[in-house]
Image (cartoon, rainbow, N blue to C red; front, side):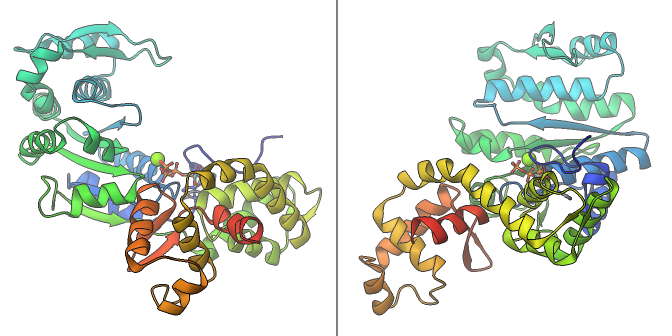
Length: 376
Ligand SMILES: Nc1ncnc2c1ncn2[C@@H]1O[C@H](COP(=O)(O)OP(=O)(O)OP(=O)(O)O)[C@@H](O)[C@H]1O
Ligand SMILES: [Mg+2]
């Protein structure tokens, strides 16, 4: 039997819940060609949301093409131009021959090397001579606008893991180039998102950076408990099993509404259920999840300094004013400077998230493990 929950993959159809306001807003931005930036911590559902909105928007407007690019593996400008050209061309061509023709037609100064991709989609793959594109990236950056104008289309270019561009050589200069081209586009909009919140914030909310005020910023929230509980109940029912209301609530509570973990814990609980899933089953599943992850948590913890760990211990204990002399003494924190340094490093390493003036753990299961096992 197919399992009813999905984690680590894009959530679609019956695996996707709530996000109605965000979906609506994103569909509107796509069809009206407004630029959007989506920021959230890891695994809260950015890619799934963009995917859903893209499908709906494309259904609403037959002139609209959505081009999705993932910069996960893209480490430099050269690769960026290649993947941009390749994806723009393939999302605006229905046949392979059309893609090849586009690749030839829309470049006059650059000479792209065109080959059939090795991936199963058989997309065209496009490469440029590095020296040439470095001198003259305009055609690659204008490609989407030129194709859209020529073919009477609207294009939304969605770029995942966008914060990676902040690590390219000469990042500011590169970003300036992108922005100066993209902001002039009339037939193309950009949806930029990524999973390193602090880096995305730096790129888009720092007034001295080129992408400052580039578009509407959407801060993705967690999914509300009532939707998650209803979702879990429904998915159990779909497979002829049941779950008690308090058991679904416990799944949501233990995972602190973290969408990925909600689905993972629901799955582990479902696998342990014959007829009705109880609170005990969920607790058992949660313990096994923590065990399964503990090796990873040990590895993460080994990278932390003693001062960082002392700070985390105070944070987990719920201390209100960590910088008070008394609290610092209690947790062996050496100084307020040490607190500031720990915070910066922990945010940078994706252990903590800083939002609305508060520091919180990105990974609720890691927080639980630290509290119940490591600091015990
Ligand atoms: N709307 C949703 N309804 C139910 N589950 C969801 C939803 N959105 C995300 N999830 C769960 O969270 C997981 C991660 O979602 P997704 O990959 O879309 O997040 P992300 O923010 O893009 O992650 P990353 O930061 O790793 O890129 C999914 O596999 C799914 O289990
Ligand atoms: Mg993603």
